[in-house]
Image (cartoon, rainbow, N blue to C red; front, side, top):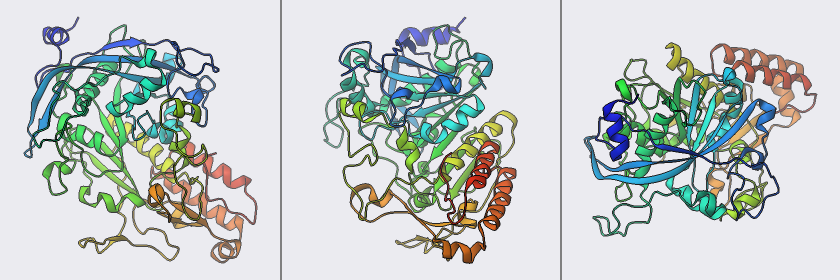
Length: 509
């Protein structure tokens, strides 16, 4: 039976800062199975971003998984966030409706109890499950559930894709007009997403018969995404978002690309690098950040020491040799037809951008960041569940750090020095360039330049010698928990099927 404060919260909407997070209303949507349904103008259609219609389709039943979809409705406050960290209500009790996509083991007995909630990327005005692209092998291996949450920026794509199905989705601005600086407000209020995220976690952890994952015993819920939104939630909202008994909404955080927090509402400005709100501190639950080498310079202002203090458990992993993005998160784009229907398809399925780099490159297939996220999620789970602290290591080395032009220190092979070390950089078979020449996204797209056989022979003598060294390195990485055991086995299995004169730079098997 809900407590009286919770009953009042459900009756009257969002609640005062510091009170229990209210439960939203969860409405399941029908999951149809007609793969030929088009052009998505008639309800019911296949859900947007359903796994079988990704750019590289995934068939969850073959993995022992299934998929559900819900609309989540509630009321949320719009907040102001002062420089001293104080959080105040700017506009209370604004209605919202979002959608969540849920992937989980088909059988409750095979569920680990862990739920990974992803703030889906809306850079293209439709949902992109970037972190699912990195994490799904570990999630499926461990029996976890994944929940992708639509943010305000993704609503437009959902409505274009299927208005009948998603027309209720809304983060409508509750106080239209102009911002204090005179800039006009947008139709949607970005600031409604913070309470929404808290309420999604509350719903997952509740015991209601209509909740998402009903019939599955949810034990721990982690929040993940790239960049600012999760940092804003951690620093501004997490201290105030409590469930009954004072328990946190989220039990841990996994971050890609730590920079600084974003804006708390559409009229606010993000905290500056010199602002005390910029750095993650004293969260009370474990936080692990994974930073590709190419992201390190952008994140220097957010760097801080690792900590095992009970109220400040934190790790920052800077991955030497890792590039900002590789092929794996793009494989979980919606397929090209669905991108088009949702209103923003760019390039081709093989190169999903409006411009090409010069010279043309392919999306990077080196799974270094992939493996790093698998291990980070496994380590986060052990830290939360059992108090087992993750490993520590050095940061990527920076030259001229206190100047306007810092740079990463490179070794003789052109790869980064310091940071998390793996065979990719300690036994290199390639140079991992962090950017490519050309317009637009090219500055963020790395290039892997494989060594020729003459250079490999000079370094290692023979493929057998190289493979033995890599196998030993992989065993160390598994023992030290930089790689998971399943990934270690995959890497060594791949070594056995390679033959001279080519040495693989790695690709997800």
